[in-house]
Image: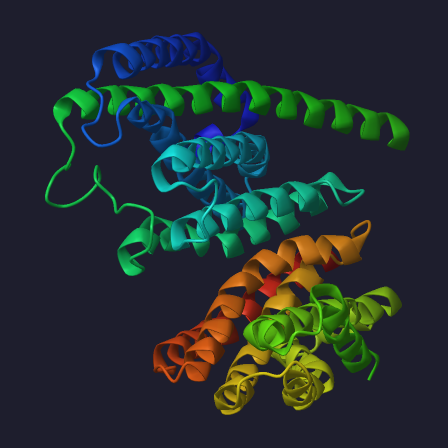
Length: 239
Length: 199
């Protein structure tokens, strides 16, 4: 694993992969949207508005997944001092924040016809909102220092502190019996939704994950380039 | 003392803001007292490490044989003594001004005792992360307030439960658990933040 921590080594693998990942993301999202919006049956209680789920649930998964990968990247960067880990966490943060906003926005669009309210202060919504604040705090901290490596280190520690929230969000619907429905896909007894709805959902989830990786590689490439430019500039100043 | 004055004044703003009807004030008293106590704690966080960082004594403290985690714990303890403790003493008086139901006072006192040390400990993480940052004061509030939310939820939950004579034990146990987790983990995170701020 340490071999891939070298940015050039990483780019040699990531660059050829990027078109494939992007194609996978576009294909899966197109197929998932088609199946979800036109093929899957409407819910017997919720009617057509159940289709918001095909965007809402994958983006909620991604909001958590991106934060977890950010925390793991930060931990590896702090422990083994891999600069790539800092850059990866930094490149992921805005993507994860966007997924969180999409999750909250689609959830509130769905909540208006179903629950009769745009927003309810229940456990899962509140903890996802805290997740959004953690993303915002991370992005604010990383840009608050004149020395970029200092900001990356401080923000990585914050990402690890905030990782406490991830299991709380995942299990909030099981621990507190509030308005948000409990988990129905990832549970020990098998998924509780019909395959005709499960498949579009899983295809969308693959598409969203591929989209994250594609976007992350693009952002990481520009972060690496920016770091190289900064080093060249510093070298010119000192020489 | 300035922190306590801030606490008193912000709480005193609420009767003007929501109107002096005593039943509305009684309903929101616990939440108002806690939110204002958190803001008051936040206001004093920048003094926890910043002066020592600027005059270099934090480096000397980091070099001494005692583990930096213990020094951070002592700093957080000192911060709690000068801000948390006065807030605990002022809180029942302010709750009385807001007409809080009589059943809630003992619970208010116990959740303040359990909650305010956690505020200082989590605040130490924020204060050490923002050492040397631009506009550190605003930044601290963005970093620390989301982490304060669970404490607020359980503290106000306990007081509301006591006012309605429901069991308060689960809320208080949660607060104690958060304190027990923050006691070793927060100094550890804060000490590693100080170390990377110094080199």
